[in-house]
Length: 215
Ligand code: SF4
Image (cartoon, rainbow, N blue to C red):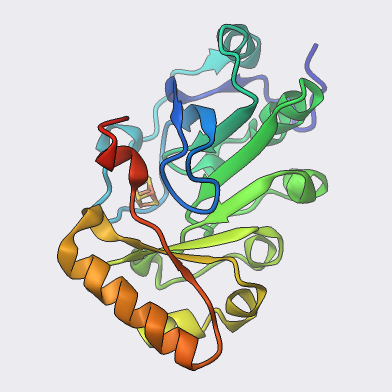
């Protein structure tokens, strides 16, 4: 039975599938991805174009949980699209936690929901700030995210990274070369070294699932 926080009991879904977490600090973890439909921004290299438009259609959360019961996975990744555009996010997350799942949310960081606040410390929030949003990250996401994943492309530079000094200090920054391209891997390694010389250690992690031929 759902414990409703916002009164929302349905979700706009793009897809549900099992794989490994191919990105960031939790790389290699077996997980079920819940991809919500709709994103509030448009990144030029987005690899999920089908998840960007908002749609009216939604499925009942109860139906989604029935689907999830067929997976043995303990870790659930809510991705998108942008998960914080989904009003039923607090219901979804609190029910997953009640069912003993570990929950990760992948967000562009631009949005927040007040009803989510009491759950924020119980999940792994991965924030990936975006150039098209002028690197804006909502103060609550800055406060609660356990990981900041920067896609290394033509836009990212040292100044942008240094504007996130409080998360650099925490050691939770990942540099992810866009599209696993050699030019951006090289740039990521150069940024890593420059940060190291300034006293900050960051990780360079490519999209591992793509090397493995996984979704
Ligand atoms: S925030 Fe994510 S889902 Fe939205 S356009 Fe950018 S990469 Fe795609």
